[in-house]
Length: 86
Image 1 (cartoon, rainbow, N blue to C red):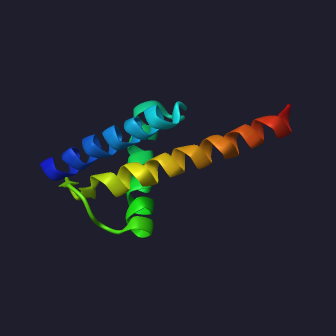
Image 2: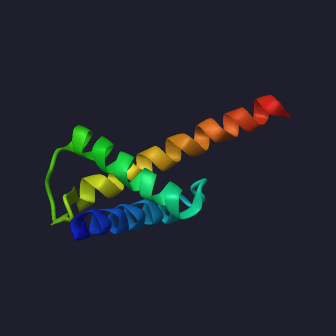
């Protein structure tokens, strides 16, 4: 149980760091950060492999890079949807 909680915390921190690097807020607040952290970690590990320091099952460097890519792509998609609804 504690390892799951630790993974949620680390996933949220990874998502928050990605949002800070890109300079965009992630929709959903804390839950959005956790989801961005988990999905970004999966994406980063799939693209770059599993290297670097490992905390709570996350390879930190690929996870942050993957989360930055995810947040950047989501911001582009959300901007495109805002233009079509205006």
